Image 1 (tube, helix red, strand yellow):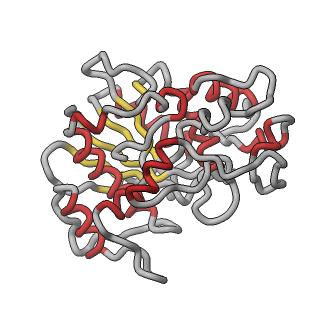
Image 2 (cartoon, rainbow, N blue to C red):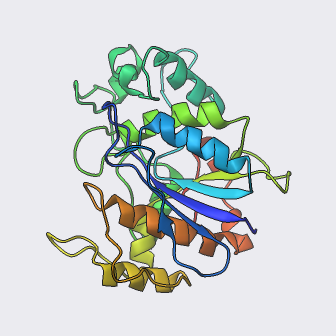
Length: 284
């Protein structure tokens, strides 16, 4: 499937006014290297980013990849929140619920769910570890681990690599975007000119390319270019600076290139039926 451009977003769910950990990279068709999109101020906010993104998708057909879990495990316990009355049974209802719970929080922040019974009991949050928290896994994460590695459990919101806080903010964003784009793999991509949003996992793409971060250094420019070469992309220039608290630019850059590479393979778009409730990491 072809798009006019490919945007990789390294995401952040923190409560701060500005998100230092957000990085945005973009590339067009062909094989030119991705480039960093700078925020309107020193750092992105989630609100500014989504406003910018809506403007971009109004101009062209874009494949957008964002680094957070689009849904929760369902099939392991036949529910997102087992034992909870009126627990949502599909991703759209899940996003709406998370958004409603956090309606008083600005900038798409999603941590309000940690204060609300019975849902708070399912999370390992900065406030406390819920009694019903466990290391539940979606099928896409299980498959990802068999191939290279798996992300942190979706209900974990504490510690390095935790994806839970970002996913809560992300689900609010998906609820906001759901009528403006296709959100894969939950919808059939029937309109040929409509942009598509998918879930990405940058560390997986680096591992697929046999590239690992160097201790205390992270991803060197040379290593990033090795990964870009795997994804049929031209290299970054020698003067390219990789910024962000956790080398977030490296993650957005490789995601952008991986989106372009994988999207051209029709088999990548064919994923198990379980993805209709749990989502799927693009490229896994």
